[in-house]
Length: 251
Image 1 (cartoon, rainbow, N blue to C red):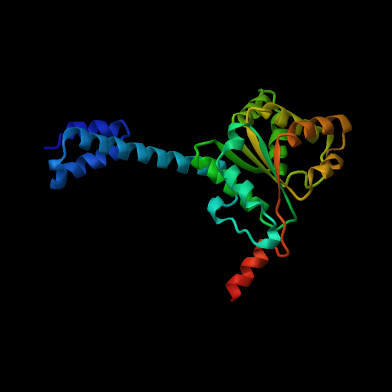
Image 2: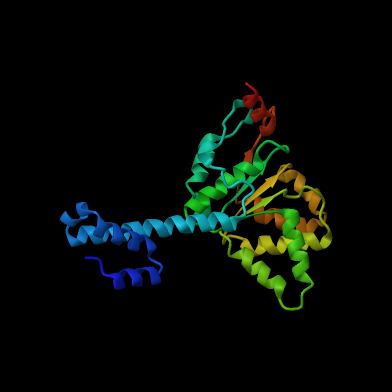
């Protein structure tokens, strides 16, 4: 017979998975033939799976992806995209995150860099890493606003981004940065160096970044901290992904 007080305590301890199965075991006679250990193990497994599922949902929501439906297994390897499938699958295993290495996604606008970066991000969430997707202009605005606060907001923001396992920076160096913006970028890169991983989505190869950063010495420092520990992936294509999908839909 089900003990209502036990059920209440399970709900109070936010063990809804165990509570639901406890009720089910009381209502379904098929469970009566199982010994206590088997029934208890089943309740623990149910609660464990529920919490893991909830954690994954929470990580994906907090990451603020551009497309939370992106997935590594859905990447399209058309010949003209020239994607290195072996490298992508290797990165999907998460070894680059363990080694605190970076990924640089390069290619023209519309070729799917953002979507692939989100796919890597979702995969990292599945491995229970903390992920954040943000466009570089938005990050720079956030840093600039915090810089003018007298309550230490800027340092707190740097620490916040330092704690993110995988930071996805979209629209990386799409335009030239001001002197203050370059220094803010250096702050972020320096705080995360060899502690975390970053995915950079850029229309330009690293060789073209120097001109966007302007200040020679600071630019050298930023590039030195990024490029040497990064996997480079060219996302090419004769058609943009939007054009490609439109053609498929029209058939």
